[in-house]
Length: 333
Length: 253
Image 1 (tube, each protein chain N blue to C red):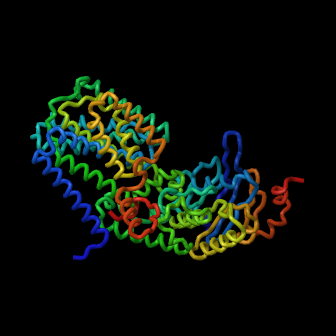
Image 2: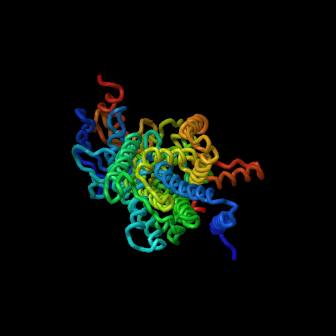
Image 3: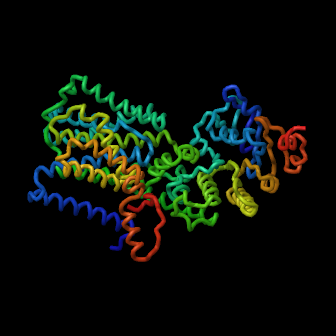
């Protein structure tokens, strides 16, 4: 059966995804990746979801939002409450909890987005920061969310297959969205909002759309975290956490999905390697950001995606032809 | 019926009456020039026509339908497209993507259809890409399709902006100083291009311009604005001899 170029690339991607899954799964089953590192792998996958989702609102839409952790928190608490209070068996409740976490976070995304997205730049950053803190404080003061002690006893349901599938789903949805006319509309807002309006793009709608989709996946990631940590506490999902996610987005490149995956991986594994220096973590992060902004402000991959760069390098080596910088926009893969 | 009918249009910014009692009538397939000294309010007229500002007074009707109060992107759907004085391209994405964004409202598949890659996605994307390439071919830029828009030389950036506006399939095209920064040869080429656009796409063009050779050679009618009011309208011949116009450009007596 002869496949078109696009179908072939989809097939290769699918095979690669399945291949990586099998390799990692087997490594864990055989114990070559021990319990401790299995936990890190889960955290890594969750961080990928967080980074890729924030990148949609920040890198592709171009709006600086500093309240992403608020959506994670809302998702975590929603999911935890469903698992704890619904009376359903754990295995049934878990997927429902995850989806609900995402949906509730998306609803918050709409509620916050409608007033907040009227603002731009620094003002938007501050108002989203504010909303993130409001969420944190409100949760800490409500009885049914456990107040200051948070929620505990959340069943440990997050495992490698779940986390991996959700990470793959998030990445896939992002890619497919960005490489469509709706993705282009979102990107046009980042490039020049006035020109986008003048070209017929309903900027209010698309800003809200990107913001809400980002919130949805943040909520799902929150649900995964809740079912991994056994205990959740709104203080862990504060402004600092939003900054942590933002650092990953900026490091990878605002507007590069593969960059986000790369950066999330580096910034999850690096603290582990520097475990002895844990107290210097914020210091190292800050220095890292400063150095990055001085020498490579666009992040590791800038706005390019890893696959195109590799292709470009190969083409360069083989034919000596210079590849013009393109955007991740042709609907191929 | 007139394509565009503007009546008694006025706008006030704080204490300044930037435009007062502006009347414009444009018919299908016309090329009209809006001229006047700097600061006369010409770009303000464009901004009012595309709803960047809301008028303090007056009416704007496109094919009989009032567009006052509509949002900018809705006005595109009604059929008015514009270019900007200081080119506003989507610099970091490709040339063809700039045009595909212009086609956004003429393609028809939902967000879900895009994510699930349903047949509507493939057929609409194909149609959009072919239409965009056609447009580029008309302007001799098809070899630049995948280039980053910001890397284009100035003249081609201007052409690209016009292409993007054309992609929205307008009935009226507003060009804001399209010849800015062009030498006489490029200006003559631009005149041919605008005539071609009018004939091929069957649209009207309202252009703001300071280059008199282009304005006199291209426009069928001129509207002269000075300090926010229309001081003269007529054919290029009539306007050339109008003492009020001469006074406005060269300074009063």
